[in-house]
Image 1 (cartoon, one colour):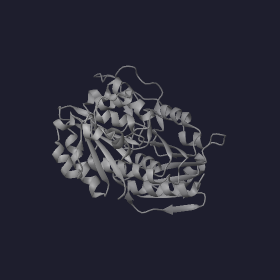
Image 2 (cartoon, rainbow, N blue to C red):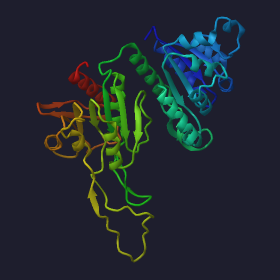
Image 3 (spheres, rainbow, N blue to C red):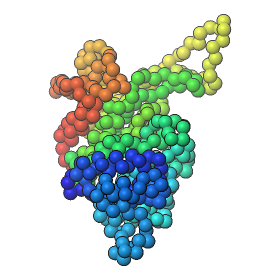
Image 4 (tube, helix red, strand yellow):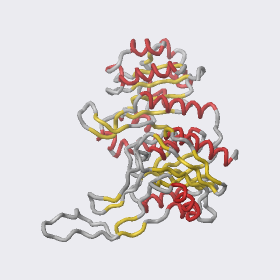
Length: 401
């Protein structure tokens, strides 16, 4: 990475202080950093702080006569391998989505021919506002990659999505983006579908049937497949996780919604079905909250079976992916249950994991890969390491296009 350079645009928000730590992390990773500090950003961090950490002048004025004599905004926009906007405020995102060029930062974003990574940061209501969501869709369709935002407490006292991702997480996204820029990767040109997280099957407007899946393993797998160059669509049940860098995400709630999203994504080369899909749903969900009434009989829930997403995608046909991978979360007789599932579902691999401990929601996992050729046991390791190993195994199995 010693020859790589990042252009960091610091927007105006309280999270700007985190950008100083990001500069420090980038320089420690031997990545050169040049900085554009917006006028609003300079209300939170100083040009002197930015310059001291980056070792470069902090740029801020579009009409700097010395620099613009040499078309400085064009030179800045082309000088880096990656443009990072952190914090990416609602204002900056809106201007970038509309193609406005009202200051040095937005002019540079419009003039760049390099990939752009944004780390959004704003109040929860601003993030959830339809206008911001429309701008988000536009930016993603233009090829902008997002990291975050996270859920959490905010400086305004509210809680929810909108916190800027931590500097270490942004650094990881930068490293992955630069790695993709350096080489196309063994999965370049491959389309991959990943499912993750639980499904929520409504009982009434406030209650639902679900499970303890956090989505961490599926999100990690989607991220690592993207690092290897794949075009990844992540169909996610409800989670608290931010979409991985370089991954397109569709959020669903129920098993039937997840199946519809998966079928809409076809054809793909690989389907990795990590989601913990609810096996059953209520036959009829109540339209209003079911009330507990003293002396009344306990409500009876009549359950019906949900569609089998893994079996549906594994069925022979012109749109069946070349490689279909299922997951088996078991609490006993792990390998026997996983082998039976492989035969029953018709998929190519089953990734079996024992979830009787703290695997669901935890940071580590131990898996066994069940195929028609046998069983491959992997040691307990971080979910990111499991994801990396599985992505490499997928790439080795498919080979180049």
